[in-house]
Length: 502
Ligand code: KIV
Ligand code: ZN
Image 1 (cartoon, rainbow, N blue to C red):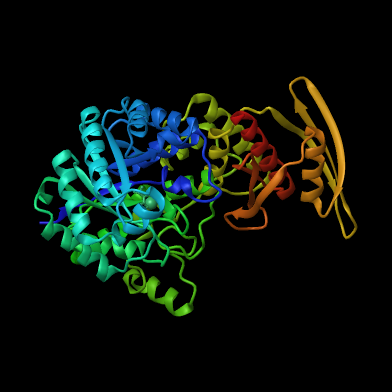
Image 2: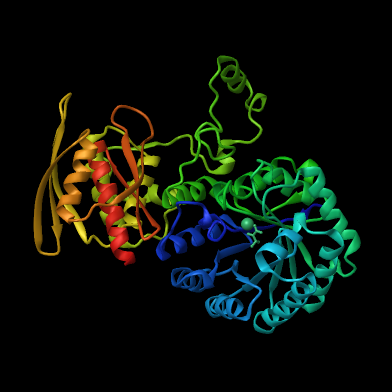
């Protein structure tokens, strides 16, 4: 019989540790709700002791998630565990995830603790966590570089102390599939009471083997995989949730396993995470990249037209890609628009958000002949994640050509209207400078990305802007058929996001 693999999604914890990513509470709650729709078993919502923002986000997620286990990370200290529990206690199914490093290199150089002390601390803190919460996970950090006899001892003792799940991290992404598979097998064979706990794995992608290592672990007895959407995470990231899930589904014959993930929600989850984190997905990314189901060469196209399976091992529909995406135009009414929203998965939007999105849709349909599902999704997301408009762009005008560009903007700030103009190196630069003058601050622009939503000359331009303040990144998007307008909106949105935070 096939065995169930538990999917532990850490997009909101390890994923949020991706350089340049910082999500606000609303965004984290939206992602968590979508992860629940996706059907993951565990959502790692954050690291509550890390900051007030993290704490509040874990608390909000705990209150909002209905059926999925919600966990938060805690070092093996009372303060971390107490703080994690304070945030997690509102969850219907809480879990405390505590960790301490067990490799010699980490114990000597980071913890400055002897193995004996680490063992004692691990047991005491698992016991303490268990006194607060009936579901406890323990991770010996840097497990894959830990001396095996010491690791076995730690694992045996923490199970006795009450750990329900033992996570074996390849913290630095150093292991290989064969080695890691053997490693997990060794744990199964040498830890006496291992049948009392679930073995979990958590692989980093430094050598590009995180997914392969996790799958090798399944073959050798692991039952929980820790992974993140789009492979986000520290440094080169973690094993990608969508790749793990689709590998298990597509190669059921090899892994004899299944997950409870609703694979049709994969695309939507991936896009939401990419939009909100501002981390673009490479075109050739497995499963969720733009080209993952595109057949370019004539031979391939011919093959697929005759028989899909010649070059397709999974269907685009199975991951939620809707091929018939041309839907509405300027004569479509509100009823058709709402119906389409439901079909693409937005069935719990507030009335006023639908109304706003509908106005935007009408406006877009006037400028563009055909409005696709992707366009609608972009419009809705802009509406759903709108932050309070401290600064509002009322108007802009640019003059641009082969000479220097100039831009004039009118910005509303409370009851005040501010008009400013600036010259710049191209229309976007000039507009950003004019906005900075109007607001009276020079922002540290960390990133600017322009891409089109769909294709065609009249495609929507989607701009992502990231600005930095106090080592925190604020990322926001703007969309329009006019790319200067999209850029100006993205810039103002990121400034407004920053103001909401401070
Ligand atoms: O990579 C790692 O070791 C971790 C642990 C804290 C689980 O993220
Ligand atoms: Zn990690």
